[in-house]
Image (cartoon, rainbow, N blue to C red; front, side):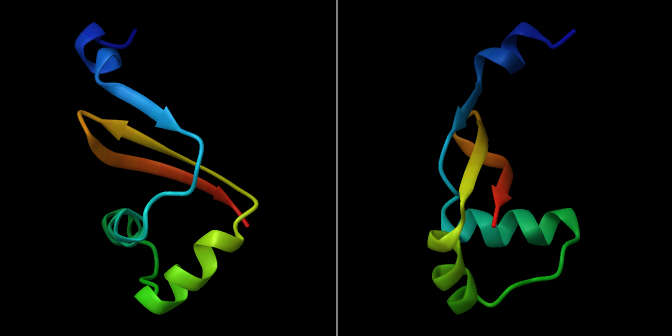
Length: 65
């Protein structure tokens, strides 16, 4: 069962993650880095995106291309 203080600080946003968060989250998750120019061009073409904030910082994302 989730800790109440953790759940209270979580929020989800139904849009693609901001460019810098997208790049950072790919890096820390071990995925192949993408050039910033490619991210700027590609993110707006996503079909659907959601990202998760924990205490005001983006901590996760899901994007359908």
